[in-house]
Image 1 (cartoon, rainbow over the protein chains, first blue to last red):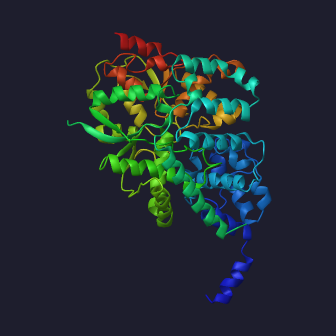
Image 2 (image 1 turned 120 degrees about the vertical axis):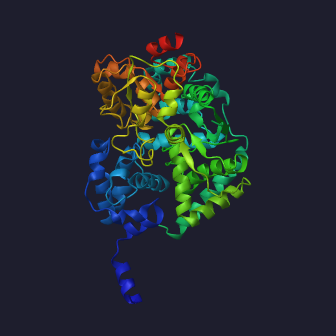
Image 3 (image 1 turned 60 degrees about the horizontal axis):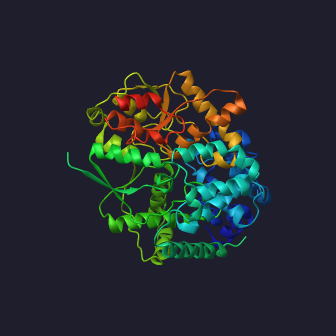
Length: 206
Length: 299
């Protein structure tokens, strides 16, 4: 094909699809969706999505940038991988949902009170502090930063007590807890990975 | 048979005082009986499971797993990596696969790892403990170890999601995996082959952020086990175990049900069947006590 032709085709290609292909994890697969709907029918929380995966893929191709990235939908993914194993085109749907969620968060476009968006960020911040998850602090954050504070804490107090009695929750974790020894090395490696990723995204700036 | 050695990735929830510490205790007991030596990857880190994606982009998350694999290659060379947690296994295996398929991403991950003086060659197979049991040992070898058959117990095998999809156990179907039932049978208990919720999602991490939606699903998992007359549920996944066990009280309050169903790890069943004590099987780590199993262990 001549350069002129290629240029003309590029001109007519939808820019949001380009953006997703360049910037979203496994985004290059979006164009492979054939709109069969098996993913939507296979999703355990399918009834909770405003736009099930199949619809999100069509919306991306239709250029509905704002609607897709500010959607609550991809935050409903439980990572059960039903959609992936059933998709006849082998589209890595779960990963694209995670990728869309991350990209929306990165651009600050996620719904601000979305509980999973908040929890997923708290989980990452928690593990980056010591290199391992501190379940006790994560639980406290869950109650007070995602839930309704004391009300949520009280609602779950029996579970906390039962876990403590079973030695599956340790209140002392609040004062430190498990950690990797080479925390400095781990944090430097992740910081470098973040820089490399940011540089890659900068090339295809939205 | 000679001792089998693996490079072991235990994961955050298995640590002392954490939510699946009972899993690790029973895995250690099970491995003693099967003559398996688990060499823990020194200074392993969290894999970010399947919920770190809000803050963690693709490369930072891959780098977390790459560090664990690199540490394993350095300290436990030529040993397959084994994880007991479904999410640990999935994240690590997924990272190895992605970095294998994408040389640019591998180069970037290694640039990042160089900051911690590590290098990934990415040649190490990554297995779930269930694969070790099924493929490296087999059901007959497991049955041969049984000293106290779990006779009279009906146990619903709840495989869940991430031990089953997208990788699963070779030769098993995604929709109706049978290996867990075969383990239950090998231990002398009765499996529930037509347990229709065996691969139903429990909500995973969304059990914490979307409790109502997740508890609807957990209710179905429990209800179906009761409908089949099961005495208990067995699972290979820490999140499945916790979600299906500890929210029964809240589900009872919301829905007026009377659930009181023990949820065990396969390693706990095996520890008891192999003749070990309730303590070695970490039955004291149950929130819903497994009394029938305690009785067999006490015989």
